[in-house]
Image 1: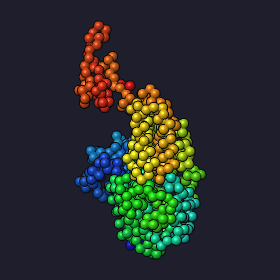
Image 2: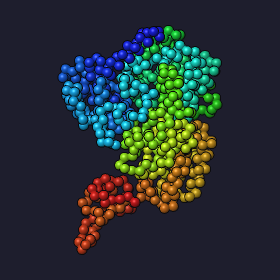
Image 3: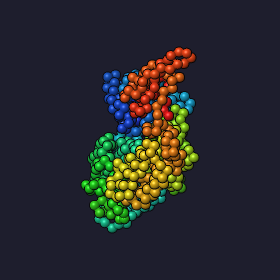
Image 4: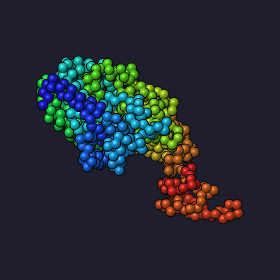
Length: 627
């Protein structure tokens, strides 16, 4: 039981030495760690772990090597990862069949398995250490502190990375001093709007009520976003500690985690972390003998994107339908069960212990003038290095996409990057050298959002992209206010007509008018920002809209109703594979004369073709084209 600051300091020192000795090999053992994030687990990371355990026992190596799971390494497109300390050897794309070779060659004989090392595309060189890979070189982990290093289900390892040191410092300070420290750090909410975290805490602190609450918003629902999930899976105690510091600062004794039910691994690890903290006396009554009491509660998300909006989230926790409330009053004044409530997302709370542990000045030394610290992005789409990235604010989009992301696959040309999910917008090549921060992205027509970053190349149709996001918004609109409920449906209908070749020039004016109406009159941020993808694609890619409307063509050959599959008779060798693979039988044999010889070829009946693409995937000579 840790019931005083002195005992906590002693335990942290002991656990830190254990971690340091492990990483340095001071205990004379090799330490194998595997990525235990959702992505790697879906690629048999658990089975790889079990294979390592069985082989170490079988070969009598349990006194010479250990094996453990850790959180997300971030480089998701190269997982599953296996890292071996103290040499820091990093193996990627590991399978169950590779385990015996790693044990035999590396663990037993000290010989690196070269074929499992990462190959840097720019140089063609094999890279042994994680910090030598370009993907990691420009990153700095603050919110992701401990992820990929510690076992998220072992509180002792978390203590070895400084867990609860920030809380201990906060409990030695006046409540207002804690808020002042967060204000001084310049921390802004990482959930989307970028509201100063300290100001939100100040509002709740200043309300004179006996009962107050802290809520952690872990209901990230943006397509392609997995930042919060990875933090909760990799170091849940950091978020718990951040919530406790927030609770102390405003005078709250209860915190609620609201996490997507679709995140079972994150939920399970959060439960384990809460239980372990309670068992050590770091959660509950009279924490560290200071008289401060705090308890954490867990609620599963209702499966609706709108529940990520803070007032809809509060309704859901209270057992009501997840629909936004009119504001004011704001939650900091009247929130959960009518009491003052601060709502911060997972990444925001994960930054708080660092600020208290290292100091506001240290945190503020990173980033730009108005956007301090780092930001975690889920980098995906048409980019070579897909994964989780934490970079200092002020990093440029070019650095994010090309230096860290490794550029666009297959030599394709970059077209746009969508930041901020459905609430954000598309930024084109002219903005690649713009620094990433809250205000700059808004000025350029997008937003930071929770941190989704989807890269698109020349093969993406921007009208189709706008339609995709509008379909998502229509599905997720709660329907409470008519501007969002009806307006987004009308926009989707227009975009659908345009992608079918049925649009008119008047539709463009209607889109802009509807967008303005929805933005001005919707109740919550979901509706107010719903038209952002439409507005940004119209601003930067109006020529694509015109091609769909005037020429009845999709330049990127994405919109099925506006494209046609054809077979080049001069390239066709008459093998018939395309006809055999066609699910609707629309490809028929035809003969033609070439240089006096009768040759077999094939032709596509456009009236029957469903444009599924099966013929292109089966053709071995590239004779089939989309036009």
